[in-house]
Length: 95
Image (cartoon, rainbow, N blue to C red; front, side, top):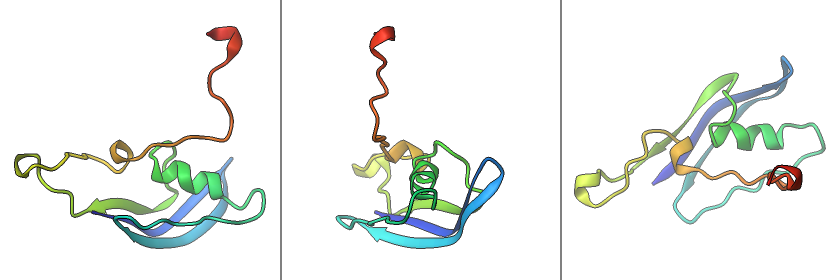
């Protein structure tokens, strides 16, 4: 399975924070995303996870086996991703 991003661009509040991002990750590979505050690291991860739309470009998964062949069906990249932010999403007052 491969996770592929091509020419990704991200926006926050209508302003472009990055553009032209591309990578291809094979199984068991990792991608390290670094940069200063406001450079779009979290925006990139949220786009990959399907939580934000890309301003440009695309993200896709290749090489997923069909269910009938013993694989898992991922209709979208977001269904294969998990996103865990840096803050606790559970609010004590609401639990």
